[in-house]
Length: 529
Image (cartoon, rainbow, N blue to C red; front, side, top):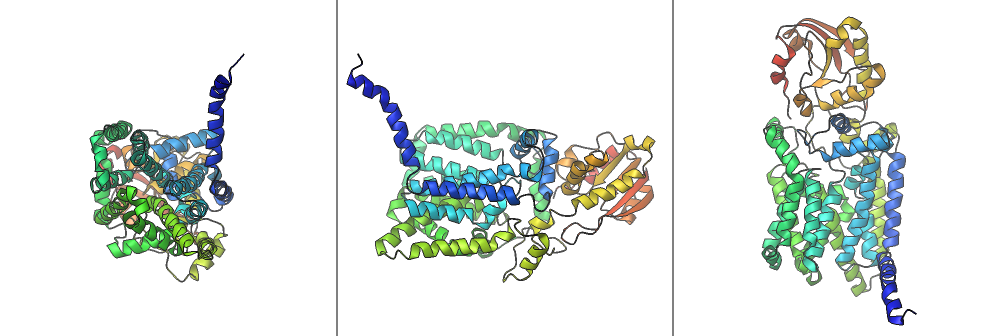
């Protein structure tokens, strides 16, 4: 016969599991999960409304040529795109399911950070709503980019740092795991890790460096990053060369510190701006958050680094879920102390109202003609991260989703003029990875060969055995091509699409090279900017 003590001992794990489950779903977490699930459904519904984004063509091309690195990004996103294509297909909804899922997970992780900071129901829900309706994260959930997973990875590291500092230093190992994966997704997380280190040194938490776990976490991160690091070394550090080229070309918009800060407010939406600003202040000044003051220093260090490096306005975007969480906890506490409970629904309603108003700028909820009309009546100008000669009638990230099918159709017109006997040695050359990737993707239905380009990673893939005796060239000038070929035939321009950034692109058939072989010309075609 089993004694009562033994019976209790056997049943204890079940009781603990039930209690843990109830604790997880307490304090508004159920509402947070509902918000996250709703956003996932909405993203999946709207994510196929326009077209494939320029950068998505790059990742699609890279997913066909898996490697430990690429010129402008680490290998994780192409690998995940490859898995997506194998399991779900390459439709827009399939490709963008992972960003949508990551964005919904970010909502939950941010709310849990608020709970780590001592927040209760209102703080968790306010954090979830703030993250869910922040324009920058709505945009990240709508496209496949290296930014798609970045906020989730940064916040995963932040959560591990909070737990490691609070009660269990072994969480630095998990910090290292997530940071190492993050370095294989986008290099910007290195700035976050650097900021964490400086923040720890500037506070009483510097004693963590006397223990072993933070160093072991660093070694784990390095081990996970090592394959890409070796790839960059083998290819003579192409990413650094690319960054130098971009800076020298003046491609990116350079912002002053004040302008940079102003665009941070816009990205997270202006009404929510005071919430995350309060969160930053709270990390420094509120006794309850004093244990995590190092996170406040981390933000200031990251801000300074990105401004000094003339980084794009969205490079710091992964940090704001943490600041929204801290600010929501401070607001919840202040409102309850002041007994001004009417502020709770008012703040929430204002954030929801502005988030829904701005949403068409970052999620394709409107038909494109109505989007153009919406943009034309906005009281502000949508920020552009890059300097380009012409300005489209819709935001840049939308304009880069149009015109690609029309380009491929015109390339096919040129391809049909190539005799069958010449086609095995007739390549298609495009000026950038967007054009080349689009021809690769849409050209399959016409039987077009994969395109060539000197742009970024396409340059590393080389001329692939083409002699150069026959080339279909996209988006060049006839006078320039006549310096390289004896015979240049203008085929036509791609059909105009008023919403596209790259529109009415010329297509030529070029024969009779003056430069010898294409492999000899190839070094001159390198374009890393």
